Length: 308
Image (tube, rainbow, N blue to C red):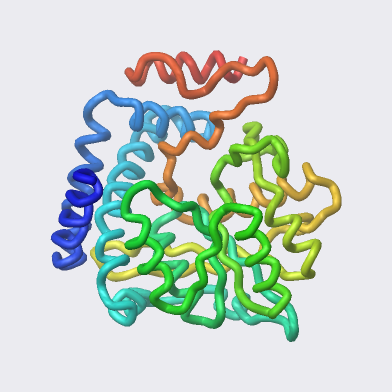
C-alpha cells in the first residue's frame, strides 16, 4: 500500500538522523500542534484540566504545550528506537532507578507495566534484554512487521491481543519469565474491565493484569523511560505496584492499577500522552468528554459542565 510504503521510507530517513536533530524536529511539530486549534490539542487540555484540577488554568495550558512537544519527540524518536541497532538504542539508558525490582522470585514470573510515558519502546527493549520476555502486542494496519521485528531485537516474544496471546503470557509467567504490558489503554470489550478512578475520573480499566497476577502468583511492577533534558539519554524508573492490584475485588484491583499509573505520570507529567482519549467510555448517564469546539475557552467551559 502507498501509505505503508511512504511511512517506511520516512521512518528510515528519520532513523539516520542524530537523536538531537530528531528531538528538535519532534518538539517543533509539537509546538505547531499546540499553537493551532485542533482535536489533539483540545483532548490534551480536556484530560489535563479534569485530571489535574489543582493546577491553575495557566499552568494547565503550559503543561499542555510541553506535553505536545514531548509527544512530538516521542513519535519522531520511534524511528531511531525501532531501526537503529539494539545495542546503540540500549546505550541511551543512563540510569535505572529501582533496578532491584526487576529481580524475579525463584520460579515466579514478573509482570512489568509500561504506561505511555516518554519512550515506552525503549522500556520494552530494555526489559527483554534482562531475560526471556513476552510482550502483549496489538497488531497494526501499517508497519506491523517493522514493529514486531524491532520489539523482538533483544529477544522478546510478541503475544497478540487475542485469547491465544493471553495463553502465551500465562505460559511465560509460569516459566518464570517477564511479561510486558501497556496498562493505560481503554479496553474495547465489556468483559474483563470495570470503571475505576483515574485521577478521580471514572476510567474503563483492564483486569488482565489482575487475572494474570492471581493465576500465576507473579509480582507486578511499573517501568517507564523518562527522556532527559538536552538529549542526555533516558532514565528508567522501576516502581512497585500498589497493594491491591491482585485483589479478588475487581474495582479494588483496577483502582490499584490506575493508582500506579498515576504515580508514574506524576514523576514526569509533561511526558505522558495526554491527548489519548483515556476517558472516552463513560458510565451510564455521564456526559461525553471529548466533544465540542476546540477553542480553549470552550474546553474549560465543557470541563466545568463535566464537574458540575
